[in-house]
Image (tube, rainbow, N blue to C red):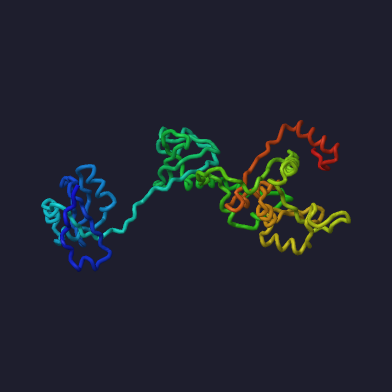
Length: 368
């Protein structure tokens, strides 16, 4: 394959850096199939040149939709589409096009994966435009979002494979779940929780109580920074935490809780508890420095977020036995928790476990 010498380029062309020059190698056969449309600023190319596969590959990435052709081999195109067609048909050898680029970057679709937090059956959905086109899924399923152009209905498919189908969008499902009866909204809450957490002081969390879809990403296995054990009271979370730390103290660690009570004669700072004044602890709670806190017999107890950072900085996985509400605070790139839910056994088994703990002196709590 040989090269033909390009035509001479005028000095005025070199002085315009925004213009793009396209060369074509001699020997790449192309057919003169194209359509052009006249515009106020010049000629707009509406279709790429067709012909041999080599010619198409040669032009790929050089001409883009919206580009304006100003000159062909140094000759102005003008405003007549037929003049551009004639110049291109009669061109031989190497062709130089003077292009005013459109500056439109190619749009690459972003791969979006979500974890579903609700069950969906299109056969039971009265709003879906076509039940046969719907995609059924369950809570915990992972979906790949194929199209989000419609405000109410997305196209998605299961990551394991299968055809795509319609699912309700985040906006539509939020509206549907937020449409509750007025009397339910006004129902008073007479219960009072002993344990509070940092999220109660942050209004940001109140705006994300509706769990619809959670965006996730494919990642290779990596070392977790925190291991969070959640479950019903008395199910054995604390025992499991202590066993893990005793089994491999070089890998696992935990935090030392803070309290506002006065230390006993046999207690030492940092061994079992860290002791601070009530005023200092209340100030830190208001500042959001505690993951969770509670009050027992007039004394405050809590877990500082900096304590978790200290365990992680030491190279250990921080094992936490916290209230489920605290998981919202931990689910960040800083802590990347691995959350384990410990399912409670039946009531009789749980009562027997509690009775055995009482007899061994491990626990003083009783089940009623």
